[in-house]
Amino acid sequence: MGGLAFRIEAHNSVPRLAWEAGVVALAANEVLGNVEVQDQNERREAKAWLQDLLADGPVAVKKIQTEARAAGLSWMTVRRAKEALTVIASKNGFQGAWQWQFEDAHSKDAHPIHTQVSTFEQATENTKLNGNGAAKDAHSAKVNILTTFVERRN
View 1: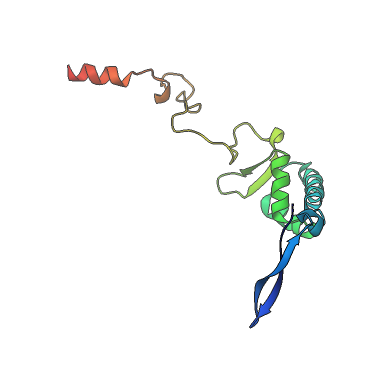
View 2: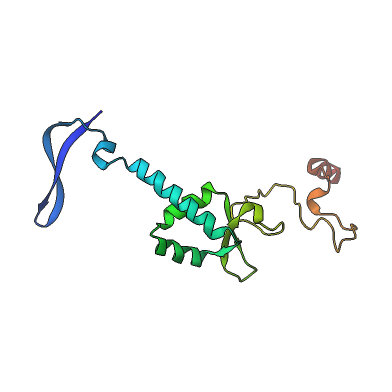
C-alpha cells in the first residue's frame, strides 16, 4: 500500500502541495494514529451519555445539543449514537419543540420523522367517521378503474 509523498508549503502566503520524490510506505492509520479506533471510542461514550440523558423520558433537542456541547461531544457523534440506539425524534404537540426519546417509550399515536409513507399505501387512519363505521375510507373501497371506465364508454 502506500502513496505519493508530498509536503505542504506556502507560496505568497497561499498553501500548496509540493510533490516529493519517491513513495510513502506507511498506511494512513499508522500516520494518523488509528482514527477509526478513536471514532469508535467517541461513539461508545456518546451512546452511554445519551442513554443516561434519555433514561427518564423525552428530552428537548435544544437541551440535548447544549448538554452535548458541555460534555465535549460533537453533534454528529451524538446523532450517530441516536441512530445506533434507535432513539426517535418527535414533536411535543403541534407547536411544541422537537424531542428525542427511546423508541419503546414512544407513544402509539405520535408520528416519528423516520416513517416513510407511500402515496399508494393503504390508509390506516380515518377509516371510520365518528366511530360508527358508516363511512368507509376511500382507500379501502375495491374499485376496478379500468372496468368502470369501459362501462361508462358503453
